[in-house]
Length: 220
Image (cartoon, rainbow, N blue to C red; front, side, top):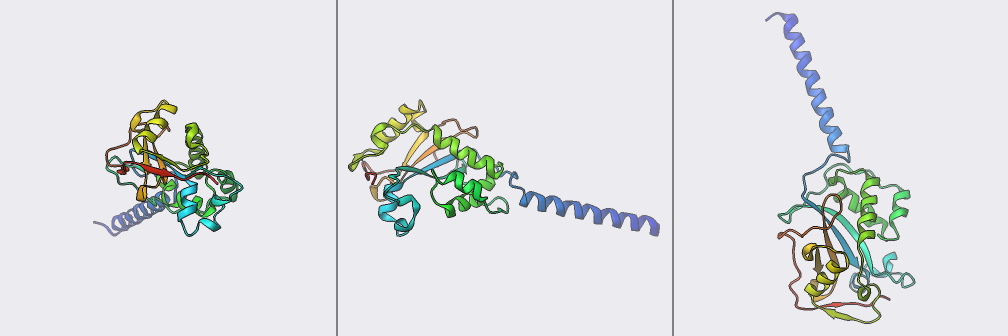
């Protein structure tokens, strides 16, 4: 091998290394670098439960009694059928204040908005604006049965009945909704959606509420 050919091969190898490094860096920092997932899980927290039981509740805008909040968005999570989920799929830049203000009416915690983008949104394959637009659309599509909109008194109901009523109100598969119920208290409703935000049956790997009855706190 001549010295000139050896030098050319070394330069070629160096150039290939630079390209590979640049590509890897681009993938890490590009919010559209998509981790593989099967469906979305829209988690709708019940604000009265959070405000009554979480130490941070009194200082959260979610718990302002003048707002009388019921369901609010916790997040839209890429999910796998096994129950596992991808997270922190790329380096996240801070969500702009314009988007934060856009989301505050339904996701009333700026820290949560930043957290959800960093942990879950970067795995969606969407830009930051498209991700939060999808959250607005998904949440806006959910029809809440009248009895759960703003109850004045404590409600006790079975998880299966709650899930059935939501499915009927939304013309969705019965298995598209899951109640989250730590200590038999209604904490959240989880909604299983396709990647284009249509209702679908939740995967068997998703945790179910096993309590025979749950308590739903009234709105303030």
